[in-house]
Amino acid sequence: MTTTAPVADARALGLAHYAARGVLEHVLARHGSTFQQQILLRAAVTTKAPQTPDDLIAQAQGSLKADPVDIRSTLDELLAKQLLAADGAHLRPTNAGRELLAAVGAETAPISTRIWGGIPAEDLAAAGRVLALVTERANAELAKLAV
Image 1 (cartoon, one colour):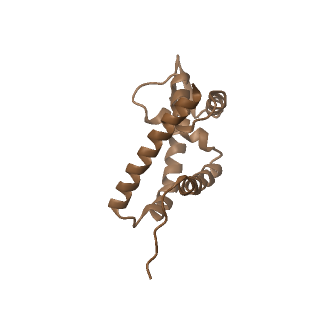
Image 2: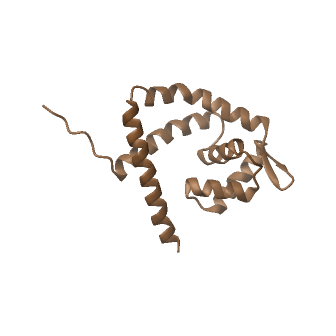
Image 3: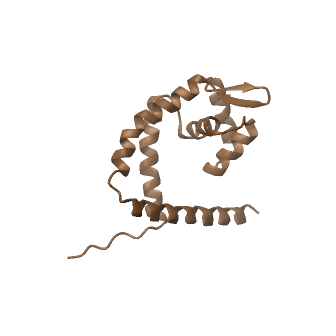
């Protein structure tokens, strides 16, 4: 008896996204943080050049497709928690912000290994190509809707 592999579609993508995000949000909650805070903090930590608040908001909006007002509120939360600090017109991650990301990364690493481990490299490469194409097409459609 042969089993037909499930076809990738929007539902399968959404289920995978929310399952993985649920794992991350569980870990973040133990550290008193949220998914949106983590996205903004990671953007600040991984950038090569200092970012203004507007730069970080634009990056997060590109990733999350969230309302800029909500993202600015999240940025204010990171400043209040002293995970980001103002440095003139720019924001920089604090040691506490870097430590938070490192702790979350260390905690999620073994979970990620269990989730992703054993998937053949060629399957991951194919999935990566498909997801990049879906992202590109969805972003194009979203841009049309925003006009």
